[in-house]
Image (tube, rainbow over all chains, first blue to last red; front, side, top):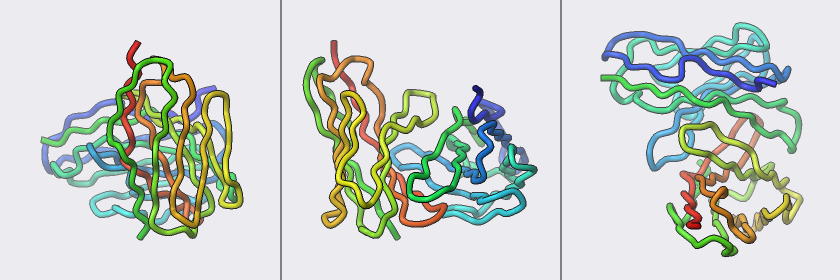
Length: 114
Length: 111
């Protein structure tokens, strides 16, 4: 069972370049999330999608866009990368049901913006 | 805004020791609290989830407690092993599709 997969695993960008981080889950979950993790800080929510066709901003959405392509896939796009976006990006999914909701995480994408 | 704090940031113990990791949060209005484990270079793995109506949850050598009124949770690890070495994060869920994470406690269990 693959769970949550992310591509690429590592990427180096120059300031101003664009890229899309891909995420897919095979657990038939309704909700999907994008987080960033910076040293000494907890994970911060960038965007989430409660169901196919819907997306909403999280805590730190500036500089990012997302697309919920279908139930399985949720992509994160950086239109013009900045050094402040150097981070580790995690995708997660959950069934979004009730107080027992738990999240399942992908392995992460390490992004370095020069 | 919910603030989640984990102290200490790092902890080193000898193998076999029992230990407690702490998590505190500022707003007691939560649906649940979850403990995760993160290995270097990997994603997060859920360990225990405590619903707001519960006081504790147990899984093997792990026991997590929740005191909503004081805004605290603890993760108790019994008879620690080198394989327990990892970063442990807690996360609170104050609402639908909202999760706030602590910065984690990095645990090193020495053989």
